[in-house]
Image (cartoon, rainbow, N blue to C red; front, side):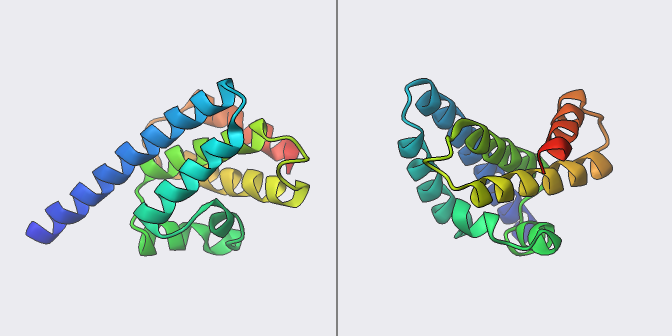
Length: 139
C-alpha cells in the first residue's frame, strides 16, 4: 500500500510539472521566446522522466506507449498533457527553428498518444477528436 501511495505521489507530481511546463510554454510563445520555453521543457522533462523532447520524438511509434507508460509510469492524464505540449511546440515552431522531420515526428507522437487516449479514456473529448482529425491530415 505504501509503495502504491509513493507511485501515485510521483504521478501526481509529474502532472503538476507538465501543467506548469504547458503554462510556461504558452507564455514563452506569446512573448516570442519559444526556444527558451523548449529549453525549460527539456530541463523539466529530463528531471522528471529522464528524457527530453528529442529523445521522445525519436522513439519508435510502436514503442512509445510502452516506454512512457510502463517504464516512465506516465498515466493517461499525463500522456494527454505531454501530447498537448508536443503539439503546441510543433505548431509554434517555424521551419528554421525545428527541422521538418522533427516536426513530423512530434505530430506522429501526438497522434499515437491522442488515439490511445481516444480508445482508453472513459470520457469522450471532442477537442481530442478534432486534434486527431487534424493530425491525420498532417502526417
